[in-house]
Length: 283
Image (cartoon, rainbow, N blue to C red; front, side, top):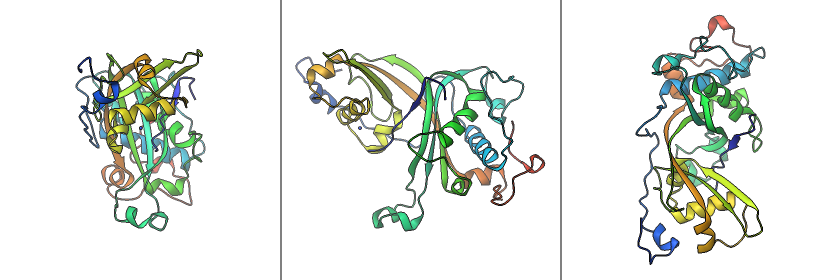
C-alpha cells in the first residue's frame, strides 16, 4: 500500500466577528446526495464502478491475476478510459466497498430499511493518481487490505456496493467552519501546545449521510485524528482546514450485473472464470 494511502473511517462526526465558532456552525446548510458531480475536474462515471467489480471478481476467481500498477503502459486501458478526455489525467481518489448484511443479522429497524449497507473497506490517496491504473488498484486495496476488516471473500461480492470518489477543487478555508456539509470534504491539521501534530480527513459524503452539523463533524474528525483533549475555541481557531469536493458514483452488484452481464451472474463459486468467458473485464 502506498505510504500516502489513507483509510476513511465511516462509522460513528462567513460570520460576524462577535460569534463563537460553535455559533457559526449553526448557520451551516446541510446537503446530501447519493451521487455527486463537482463543478470542475474529472467526473466519476458508472464505467469506473464496473471496473471495480471487474477487477475484484477477477482477482478472487483467478489466482494468476496480477495487480496493475502506476508504471503499467497506458495502452492497456480499462473500458472507462474511452470516456476520459485525457487518459493521462491524475486525481486523488477513494474507493469504498459497502455490504448489505444478511437479513438475519439486522435489527428490526434496519430490516425495514432495505437499502441499509455497512462499510466493508475504504482506502484512497490524497495525492493525484493516474486514474486508468489507480481505480483498479485501489478497488483491490480497499477490498482486500483495509486492516479494519477481513479481506472480502468471493461469497460476499453479490451483497456489495462500490463507490468511486474523485477528489477535486481543493481550496484553503478561512477557518475550520468555512465549508458546507454535503458539498465539501475537509482535511484538518493542527498542533497542540505540547508540539504534537494531528491531521485527518472526511470525504464530502460523510457528514451529509450522518446529518452532522459542522461542529459535530469537526468534533468527530478531531477525535479521528487521535486528539482526546478538550475541544475549545482556542483549539478550533488553530486548525488549518482545506476543503475539497468530489465527483462520486455508487453501484450495487445487482446493477453491475444488469449493465455488464445482461442480468446473468458472472460469479462461479466453484470454478475459476476463464479469460475466454469474461464479458466486461478490460485489463
